[in-house]
Image 1: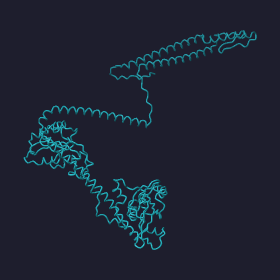
Image 2: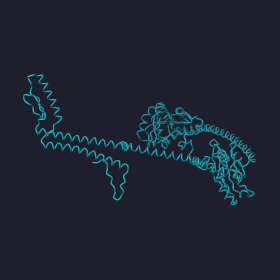
Image 3: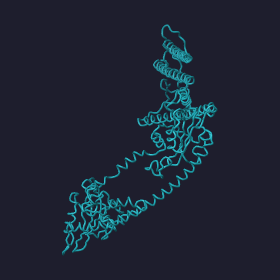
Image 4: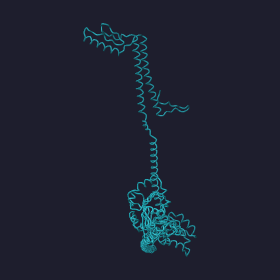
Length: 608
């Protein structure tokens, strides 16, 4: 009956109620009292009705009396309106109508009518009690709602995708909060570290500065190595030193030091490096003191240098390890690796199988590839139309065949060469057997008694390893446009030819079959070879002249670089000489502050 759960008290435990439980108990007691009063009222009414029923005196119903009075007044008005011709008297259910008088006597009921009225009244009372109970419950509910805190609304039902998205957003939010927290913590730590360093420098500044002494100084890493190795008096073997070396990548890769690195790639930005030097016979107490104060020494040097960062390196007597560390820190590539790559890139001259001008040449670079290497720096590489024009000439140099990529609007050069039909067929078999290409070849036949004659052969090429719908579509859609761009004035066109069949003999037999060759003119492999040899002589003169011009440009550029380097070395040597004369009169702190002045390298060894 009660909407609140009962409180279970374990045996032996004190019955102490909280404030919330006390309020719930009070509400339950109030609701019980209201229910008792309601039941008492209903019981009183029912007992009264039962008593009247036993005595046989039905109780007058105020509702029926009101209805009877209204009906009597209506009957009188009806009689007055109609006069003698009165209608049948008006009768009410549960009452008797008086004949001829037209009167209605309320209260003249039978026992059955009284019992029905009482049953109806009982039903009305039950409905009323039910209504009172509902109102009481609403009252108690309102009281409870006012006393108790409001519950949050139920969250709407989410789909699986919405739940996953919510999880991802929550995870991203937590990651962002963690990142921000770590960043703020790092900033706070940085501030603390800087403050500690400043405090340390303030505490040790007077002691260190008073003890710092210049041992030696110089300009280059070679000078430093020579200074530490050339120890005539044994002075270097008894000291513990702290060194600072300042240099740039440009100074470290001078041609005298590293000829594999070009000057254009070297940076002139200076960087500072620190190292420790311990003599073999240095006193143990001095070594221990130096090790204990190494952080204070580094802080002292950093304070007086103009560089924000000092890179520590490990110095060795050989010098190569220190140089490698400095070059790595400055961003220079490993010279040994560069030399290995250069060795791999170079080809063995003994591996060529024959001269370039033979008919079945095994040349590894075509004329177009050589042009890209020789002429690309000056941006004079010919376009597709220019190469096509050279191929169409009877003695065009340096191309006698060309291959284009499939296109509907432009001529895109895939490759071109001067090795004739032999070079053309070998490249198709070895290099382009998985491509769709369109090309033009100039065939030349020459003999002493018949002179020279040319034929132009078009090629629609689809390699044997070229499969798929895309390749077929390219061949079908681009055949017409490419034929128009290359030119339809050709001797014949070869298509659907296998790579194994693409040989010089096949070209000779095709010329005999498709062209009108009459008279004493011989179309054979020998006459093709004779014409090819004549072309190769002219080609060689062309390439020699072209490469001679390229070599002249390279030589001119090399001389200009050497002149610039000479001027740069003179400037550096002058600046180094000025530094040496200036450093001879400076203290340790003044020399540290002057390191890097003028943009040249330098070093100093300090004894603390």
